[in-house]
Length: 143
Image 1 (cartoon, rainbow, N blue to C red):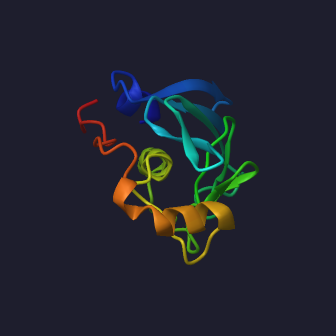
Image 2 (cartoon, helix red, strand yellow):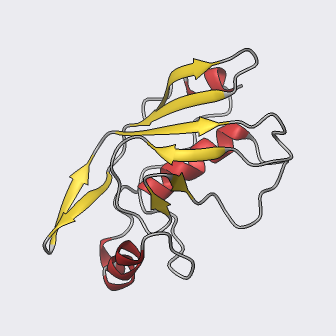
């Protein structure tokens, strides 16, 4: 389903799949996000990579998601992406991939439970600049 969903979609691409059945994915996003702040200046980034690892107990247990490229976001730190406080086994992996892209683009964020306090403060103060990328990241259902 992942290959079918993202093969012809220009904003999200499967870079690498490991295992049969797959247990690890590297997904690239060609969307605008924030790499970091340089003083008061925002440093934008238009290419991002995420690693998604599925545990043997998936989907009962959530995947582990981490950034492979730098990103500045309240709910992301290099070692982990907060995919929510309550994992739902019924969430499709392709929907999670879209949701991570929405986070990178600042279409989605939670400043009340941040992993990165500095990014949460910046987000709270700069809501007028958000989202960073407003494009629809959901590929068509027919692939």
